[in-house]
Structure formats: C-alpha cells, structure tokens
Image (cartoon, rainbow, N blue to C red; front, side, top):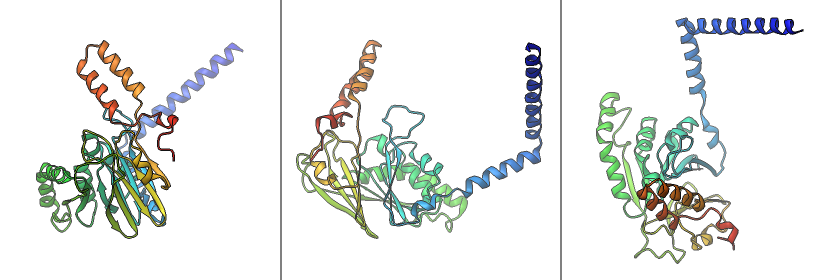
Length: 309
C-alpha cells in the first residue's frame, strides 16, 4: 500500500512539474504574452459602473474610512454620494481616488466636493481628484464647498498642480484638456458670526437637479469651521458627520435621515497605543494620542444613548 502511495505521489509531482513547465513556456512566448495582456486590458476597460447611475436612486459609497495612521488596506476619509446622475464627494482623504478608479466609477460624472474641515486626512487627495476627473472628461470646473478657508485650500492645490496642468494641456492640446475645465472653484459656506456649536445651526449650501445639500455646524474644536453635510434627494436623505465630538444638536438634523454616516474612535485603543508609546519613550506620539481623544466621538457612545431621540 505504501508503495502505491509513493508511486502516486511521484506521478502527481511529475504532472505538477509538467504543468508548471508548460505554463512558464507559455509566458515566455511573446505572442501569447501579448494576447494575455490584450485580454486583461479589454476586461478592465469593459468594467464601468455606469449602472450605479442607471436608476433614480440615492446611493452611498464609503471610499475611505481609516484614521491618519498608516493602513495598507484603507484610504483616508471619503464618502461618495450618488444622486441625479452624478456623484459627490464628502472629503478627499489620501488614497481615496484609487478606490474610485478601481471600482470603475465614471470620473467625469463628479458633481462636486464637500469638505467637512481642513485636516490633511480629509483634503489630501483633492489635487488628484481634480486632475484625474478633468483628464477623464469632466465637463467643467470642479466646485469645492467648505467653510471659510476653503478658498485657501483650493488656491494651494491649484498652485501646486499649476505646472502639471500646463504640461498636460501642452502635450494633449487644449481641445482635449481645456484649462478652463480643469479649474477648481472654491464655494465658501458661511454661517453668520462665530461658531455656536451648542445650537443646531444649518444652512443650505447647494441645490441642483432635485438634490439639496445642507451644511450642519458640528463640534471639532479647536478646528473651526467643521461641518457635517446632509444630502436630500427625492424623499431620501443621507447625513455625513465629518469629524466631530459628541454633538447632540446633530441629532436634530439627522433624526429623520435614511442613513447616517458617522465617525467613531475607539479611545480605549488610542490610550493603549499611547501607553505603549510612553513605555517606548516616545513622548511626542503619546501627547498627540492623548489630545485626539477630546474631539472625536467615542465608538461606544451608543451604549450611553448618544443621539437617541
């Protein structure tokens, strides 16, 4: 019996080696390599999530959900809202555009960007969003909404990408890459007077093709302004909190929403990392980790009835 087993193992090993050798031979034939490449390219180009826009739905895509800390599997903060044949981004954290492109969301259908606040993990990919959606056929300037200061953010990214934009127009021609369409337009959304985060202050920021977007003042002190955004479309609604501490006034605006996309932070995990940093002699990191517990919503707040009405 043992002999049969050994013989079978030898035969199986020989077959595996033969198949592997044949596959390696195929890969070393240029014409076959080209055929495989062409097939893969066509398969990728055939992927197009236009179906996301085919009906009159309000949809939510989480295109980034990680903290500023490194994470190989997740992009930084970004939520995409699909409505009225377009998609709108709430925040543009680093790496988020790769997800949009990997999912084959038609880039030219972008309708605008809404920034909750101006931390780097919420704005870092804005230049790539603008550049790539322009190159892929966006029909006009990209509108970027945010609180006072959004003008500086837009101006900074515009200047940083100015040479790159000019190169692309010079290379491909203005008929294909019209500089006028490659611009960003800052759309500041202002409340009167200083922040009053103890009140439920809202202001309509955008309205087009049945979609209404409302800015909601939230508490992320000392970061000001900080907004949540509410999207209403044909009887359906989504609220995206942005970064905020426990903020009961947000409940009044999100109470009847179909979906609430809200940030949350595990302070227990943060403090464990802080304690390890102290033990490791990294006082700088420990101080930063201690500070961030004060302006995010603890992930277990729901246990104490947070936002219940």
